[in-house]
Image (tube, rainbow, N blue to C red):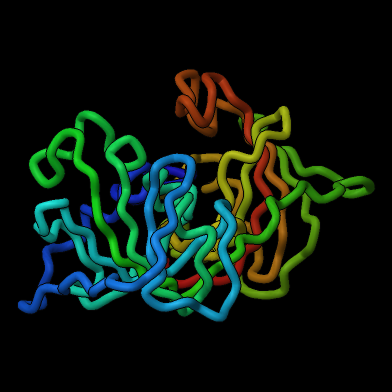
Length: 275
């Protein structure tokens, strides 16, 4: 397991092109915008509100859940959550600029037509073969929900807690002692919430900010985790200080984790199974 944030292909600077092929036969059609007010922003983005929502508006740092369809200017449908039959959820600042700008003034429950110039979409190169170079794009987006991520976790105090030092220089402090079971073997499945920092305090990964715990076999992660969680009990919270030799080694995981990086984790053990 790679303990760094994984952004699915389709969310980093693009809209969701990499989901499975559509299964619904009927293609969504562009709705009429006749008589609707056209808004043109300073960036050149245009939009029309087909339906004005009544809920909250998202910030760029929020996650949103939407149904959408996207067309080239010639009317070719190139992507649609509607056709797939399931909405899409993504960080609003992790998609094309036209979406990041165009959805921040929407409200939950609203439906908006966006006309996005190519420099706010996929630029001069496009996304061949689906999206040709210099393609202006049309989207219809229904804003279904907003998820506001929690603030980044901060390291809790370990003052007064006696450290335990294991072979290899691994250290841990039990911030909270659990009262459940421990992993029966290194191959046991564990479910945890965790946050990881570099020694300078830089947060590089957190299941807490993603809002979803992680489950994995204990022997499939860095050795500092395998050894550091072996005697934890469910319900416990542990601070780990892991030397680079028990983490990502001399090479690190650039650009997130530099070479020879000692790491700090706080781990809450939520569940254990198997093994």
